Amino acid sequence: MMFDVFLGNTLVHAYAKSKCFDSARPVFDDLVVKGVVSWTSLYSCYVNWGLPR
Image 1: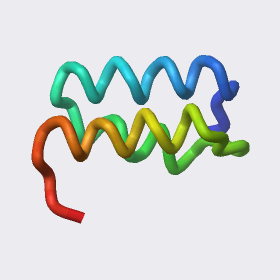
Image 2: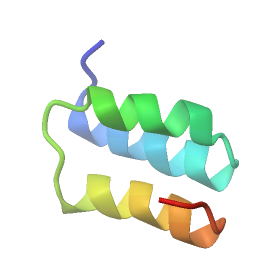
Image 3: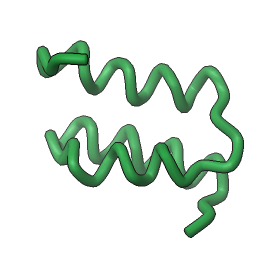
Image 4: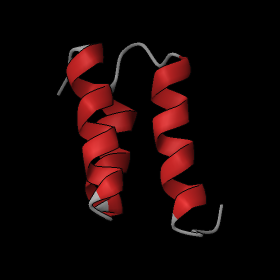
């Protein structure tokens, strides 16, 4: 499934804030273009909740 970049970034951010890590990662992986916002959203998810690499 290919997501629009804006929608994908929004979903990753929303899932991350909701602690739905199992949903955030597949959305990130399906993004065609991964920019700074995409990486920051996913990275902050892991850092904020103390998840391992």
